[in-house]
Length: 383
Image (cartoon, rainbow, N blue to C red; front, side, top):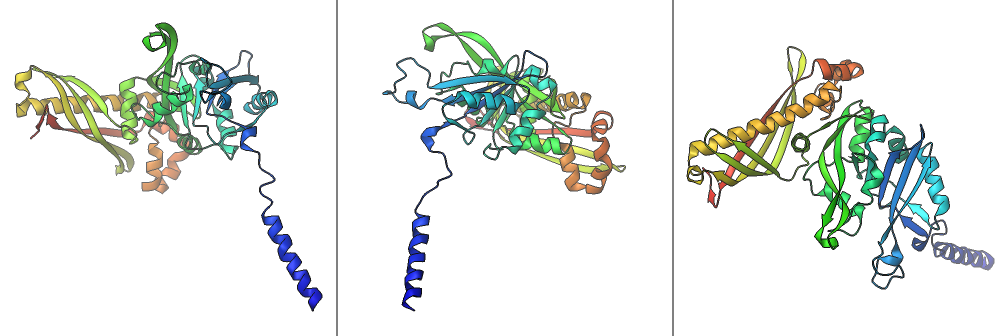
């Protein structure tokens, strides 16, 4: 009996000891490098991928760092390969730390690579367990690698600038989960389109640096970029997707020129059957404040305010209609209207799903309704 009790006590001690051993299978944080952005370009040789990864340098993040004054607190490492996996292996081989994807928030594609197809990259991302599906994707005119050289005037690193482009919701925000969902349902999507240029910056001692701008949207079908749209059209797509914060609109009536800021934006997409065929009603709503009106004396005229509202509604409706039409021309359902159809009328969706791309181009029916209500005229409440 005494021997049994001693054995039991020893077992408890051993179990407690095992629980205190820590995580023997993990990598220490000072042995990792955290990727903040991925840049993917078409390689110089056919079938090659040019991959660049941006990562912070811990030894330069503090004033006491050993990197020295004027050194960037981030690094960019590049490699080429026939696949993302091959290029990734080459980069990892040359690094002294283990790559970690837990902090990656931005993936940028060069236009040439995007037009050939981003399937390889998206397939790799979907299988990487540490890669956040809330990360943002963007397309840049020219090479994605060039965006990594932009000057982060207001942020710490270029990847921070790109992340803020998305979170500010001034143009368009496209996340990985939306891209993967569109692919599974054989639908299209729109992503932000960037452009880089040289600019003389006062903050950089009047030297010429690289600057990045949002210049519109890139339209995708089956993981390939097929067209681009203007900034106005891109903003209305973001509005329809409920990912737009504010919108500036300038209009002209017979008597006035006016500019207004639209806020409290919302949208609703409904599908109904008309003669047995789906018809989509896309409604955009928002409140607005007049910023300027010429001539000023007519600003308090109720008729003038209503005319400005009407012109603003017409302009916004036309922009969204043009964007959807651009997608239709390329057989791309950029608003994922098929997803709405599946929820409302699953049987009809099952019939149309195999031919949805052709249906989008030739038979898709929709109408855009915009309702902008001017709440403030200068410092006075509207009517």
